[in-house]
Image 1: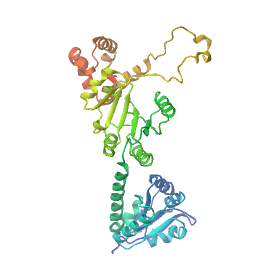
Image 2 (image 1 turned 180 degrees about the horizontal axis):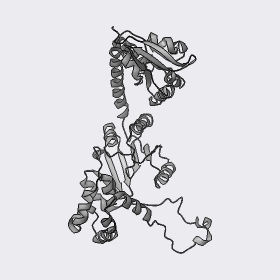
Image 3 (image 1 turned 120 degrees about the vertical axis):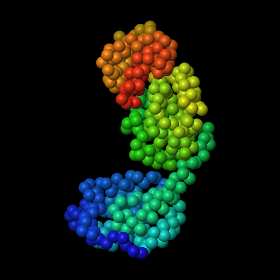
Length: 398
């Protein structure tokens, strides 16, 4: 096989602690990693899902290999770069390391054949390819096709694992997207008291749709095999519909309980998984609106309370000044209203008159803002449509 790139390698850092490798090729200089190489390489190990067989395309500096080998799982390394090994010494370090298999075949086909036999010898678990980018530049004709083949097989293996049968027992397994919203604690407590097998994924940001979040969710799905995903107010779902479409592809139902107006939340969502999604709403008046959006499974689920927190007999713990025959617990919502008004970025003249317009809307009996404005306040509809962003328009409707 013809090598596409002839190069020499030069170590960077201390002799006993190589932090990068400088590659000299055709009068140019490439780097194995550049700044922060060791940490960047170590992080690659976190992309390997439980129950899979990691295959490294390139040994690199050895940090990813070490992190994986220390888990006690089998690891295969495809690397035939003698010049790189001369300066890193990774293969020498791991020559007798248990569980590490080196694949240095002369062709992608031979390498894949060796990997297939290695896979069969290790329980036929799916491949999890980890590709160090520089290696495909060093020998694109060798490492490129092999990486593509491994990724294709990993994809097939993933779908065969993800499309498992659901709801095979009376007690379902629930994957909960925990946004930190005030109801989430009550829901998790209820799942525990009902002895429902569940796992929670904590959302760092409520508008999560990032690839990191989706990869974390997919790893949990393969490992935990839930019967459905549960969320509140669609937290965790992205507006572009990537996650909804992915759940539909896996046949993993989504249950979303709306404890606020779902029309405002779903106003601009792309939702390819409508048939795979069950919508629950605290207000029966939202049922028809959700059906008009195309959702086939829409249900009324009113708000309730946690009997472990609110029940007779607990009042003895309360301060004496709280005692009363009737109590009201609520929120003036002045803070959220102020934030929405700020986010709407209204022209000054309209901002001064929003209370009058809002009061008229409240008295109208209408529940759809745009429908009300079109009929009764076309001046405000014109302002709404002229706002520069979807976020501004949603803030005004709120």
